[in-house]
Structures are given as structure tokens and as C-alpha cells.
Image (cartoon, rainbow, N blue to C red; front, top):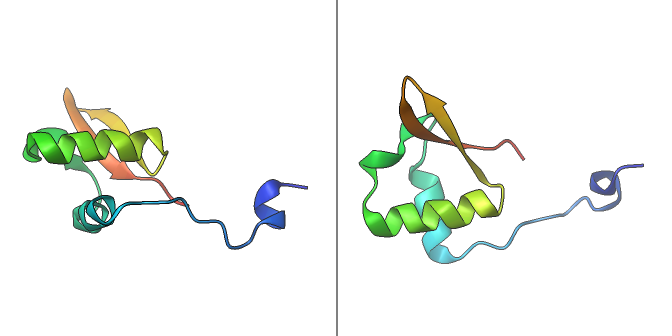
Length: 67
């Protein structure tokens, strides 16, 4: 039995700042289009496995993970 079957209402804690930035990300977006503060927040979300970095056409892109 998977833990996701046992815990049905599982939510990863996000700050308001992280939630706002997460709403702005739609599909693949280049990491370079974000300012330095937003890139720090994106790296926090990547550590929480909410976002992923993907190399696409020699550009670092950011995409939401399906949860």
C-alpha cells in the first residue's frame, strides 16, 4: 500500500510568495525570464519537488510537477 493511499489530504507547505510565483508559471518557462529573487524562490520550490528544471534546446526551463 502506498503512503499516498493512506494520506489523502497531503499538502506541501508553501509560503505566500511561493504560491504567488507558482500561479505565474504556466507550462515550460525559461529560468532566465525571472529576476534574481524569483529564481531563489524557484530553487526552493525545486527542493520541495513542486517544480522541476529541464534542459530544453540548451536553455534551462522550469515546469510544474504533477501532484
